[in-house]
Length: 412
Image 1 (cartoon, helix red, strand yellow):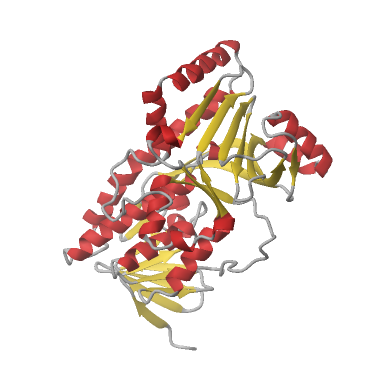
Image 2 (cartoon, rainbow, N blue to C red; image 1 turned 90 degrees about the vertical axis):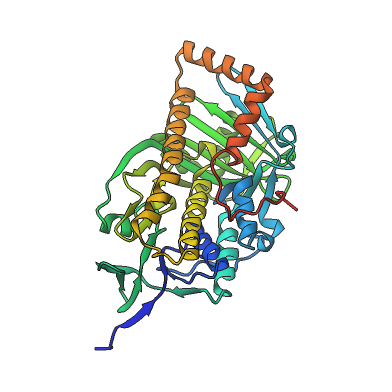
C-alpha cells in the first residue's frame, strides 16, 4: 500500500464553487495558505456562442469583493450586463415600483453574470497563486480531531492537517453532515424554471420582475441587449407542466405571464427546473470547522441574494482569519470562529425570514392582501427615502462590512 501523503496547510476548504474559491483568493491576498478539495474540475473553456441560463445577480458589494480579489477585471464583458434598474409589478393589481441606481448616486445596482464565468475567473486566479493549492479530483472521506488541529482524509488516500476546515460544499454539505450539524429545512414547494430568452425590444440593462398568483417571473439582462435569463419560480406541478411543453407552447405561456413590456419573447435554450428548498444550519461552526454559502443556508431566488450572502460569508470569515493571523493566533480557535458566526448568522436569518414573508405575501390571492400590497408598492415607489433604503439593502451596503473590502466604484 502506498504511504498516505500528509499535507500541512493553515486552511482547508472543501468545495471549489464561487464562494469557496473567493475565500481562498481573499486569504491568498493576505498571504495565508489554503488547500482546496474539489471533486470535479469546472468547465474553463466553452464555445462563445453557447448560451447559459445559470446566472447570478451580483450586488454592488459583491462586485467590490471580486475587485478586492483582483478577479473582476478578468470577468469578460460578453458574459455579464450591468443591472442599472429593476422594475417590479404585481400581476394581479397592477401596482409597480422602479428601483433606479441613479437615485442613490450609483451607476448600477450590480451585475448579472454567468456563473461559469465567475468560477472560471476565480479558478484561474487561484491556480496562478502560490498560496493556493488544489487537490482535484478528490472527496473528503473522514475527519479526525485533536486539540491542535484536524486531519482531513481524502478518498485518494491523501491527508491534510489543518487548524480549521471550511465547508463550502453546497446545500448537501459533506462537512455539515459529518459534523452532525442540524438544519432547519423547509421546501418552498416551488421549482425555478431557468432558460435564456430573446426579447423583441431591448432590455435596457434593466431587470424585470412580476409577481403572479403562486409564481414569480424575473427577466435578467444579459450582455446582448435582446437576451435575458429568466427565473420563473412556480409550483412544482406547474414546473413539471412547463418542462413538458414544446418550444412554441412554452413561449406562449411565457408571453401570457410576462405581457408585452419587451415585445414578444422566445426561448433560446432548453429550460431546466431547479427545486427550491430553504435550508439554514442551526450552527455555522464546530470544533475547528466553519460553514459558508449554501452549506450554511439556501434561499428563495426572488431577491437574487443567494450568492451575495455566500460571498459575504466568505469575506467575513476571511477577515476573521486575517485578523487572527496578524495577531499570530490559532486560526481555528473558538473565539475566531464564534466571531464569524455572530457576524453572519443574524443577518442571514433576517434575510431568510424576509424572503419567506415576501413569498407568502405576494403569493396570496385574497382580495384584501392584493389591495394591501398594491397600495404598499405604489406608496413605496413615491417615497424615495424608503425606496432608497431598499436599494441600499439590495446592493449589500447595510451590514458591517469587512475591512478587506476595497471601496471602489462599481464599474471603474
